[in-house]
Amino acid sequence: MMAYSATAQKDRHGLLIFSIVLLLSTVQSGEAQGDAFLQPSGEGEAWLSVSWTSTRNYYNTEGTTRIFDSVRTTFTNFTLGLSADYGLSDDLELNLELPIGYYTLTSGSRFPDRSIFAPAWLGIGVTYGRDFGGLRGAVSSLVRIPPGFHDGIYDDPNHPTFLSDGYFQLLNSLHIAYSGDEFWVKGSVGYNLRGEEPVDEIVYSAEAGVARVKGTGVFIGFAGVIATEDPSQPLRPFYAGASAEESLRQDGGIGRFATIDRETNFRLRPGGFVKINDHLSLSAQYQVMLFGINTLNLNTFNIAGGWRF
Image (cartoon, rainbow, N blue to C red):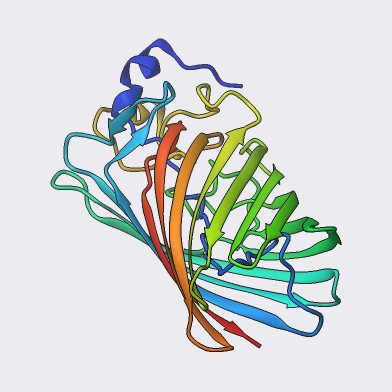
């Protein structure tokens, strides 16, 4: 692992150490892709979601919030999420996901505006679930295939900025859930195997919801990521593709960003849904970042529409 130099330690608060690891945040009414609530055999549900977030700060390697730089540099992300779940049998479900993002980076002065429009990955997986009395349990496995196949996220000559061409991921998770007449609770924990430079991570989430009025409901949940290696000691705490001299510049240098190869964060996620008819459902969710180490301080608003078929 590369250690910080003394100069990098001094200047790291002025560097943009960020990632564009896309988080598909598809809100669903009591059923979530890859969780313990499976679709019935021969039935399915497809979701289209739109997420928006914008920030000028991040959590540094000490867990303290810092602005990117002194020229009002702002990172904005619009993500279009496409996903679908289909019941292959009463106990086995097929899961698909495709998040597509539009990212922009703007500054008040000094740096040109920068943007990129690209899919994050194609996700294909299965979930196997069973009833255990009043509880439901499930296991799932999801492979995320990147849009490109260059080996290495820091040395891709065709993508010197942002997230290169991505990397393979394999997310294996355990799920548990309980649903009553007017409420539900569910939780998940998973281990995400990641290729190339990013280290593996543990992902977890939980949610509790109430549906007192037929066809509507509100819920609150939390989610987080735990790096399997020390997030305060990232592999490359400076700009990818920049020379050693350029990487030590204050206030953004040339605007080439290193992908975060490890991060830890914790997020609160309240939301609600309404069922329009037997086929169409709408939902909304707001995600608030409460804590992080070496991660973007992202508060995200998400709206989604689901169609049962």
